[in-house]
Amino acid sequence: MVLRAERPDFHPKSRPWEERMGLITDLRSSISRVTSSLFQGSEPKRIGIYGPPNAGKTTLANRIARDWTGDAIGPESHVPHETRRARRKENVEIKRNGKSVTIDIVDTPGVTTKVDYTEFLEHDIEEEDAVRRSREATEGVAEAMHWLREDVDGVIYVLDSTTDPFTQVNTMLIGIIESQDLPVLILANKTDLEDSSVQRIRNAFPQHETIPLSALEGDNMDEVYDKISEYFG
Image (cartoon, rainbow, N blue to C red; front, side, top):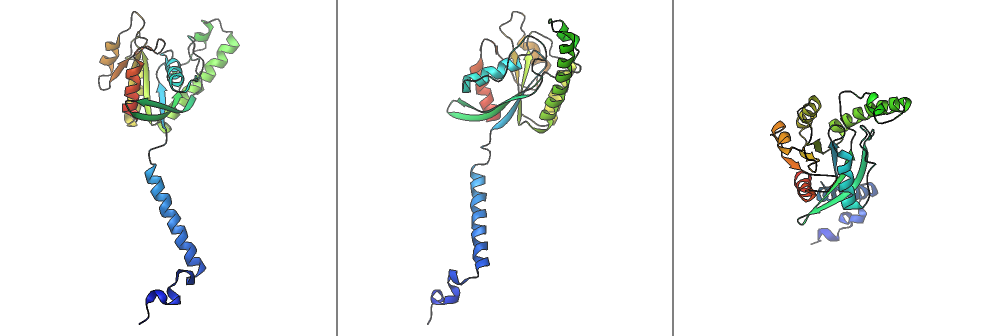
């Protein structure tokens, strides 16, 4: 009796070259699929920092970036609409309670229904420069809205706890975030100021958890990092 393995027509090398190459290609594809499944979800989450002008978004973005990478994202200013283009800090790894989450921070321009160049004049900025800044800020708002609808995996929504949060812009943005089914963490910033009211923000958006902080002073950042890990990990 002749064993099948001893017959030349069953030896792998006797197969046509095209058939052997096809087997190799299938094997490589299988390995690629397995590798992809092993590392699925390992890409950094793109987290947009949103909110109205002068809520402290860039201050927060810089705080997070400095704490975990040593570098800032952009300049901070009391002048409205100083952030007129989205700025991004990639691969920020936050380690909390034995868990690590890697995010890309996107610091977005303050969203508002209208950017008036006269706002800049109040800060001793020349009219020509004020007009240019208002145009750039308007374009930046449109860019921020595009990011919100297309390019972010979650949102950190920053509100100034010294001002009334129940505005048209805030209600609209929170509604868009909810319609996109994005995880959102609301931060009540500027708790270092005397007229801060975190409860006012909680009352405005009771459907979401609100975390108090002072991004400027670094107060309560441990809880913020815990929540970032929980919401976006």
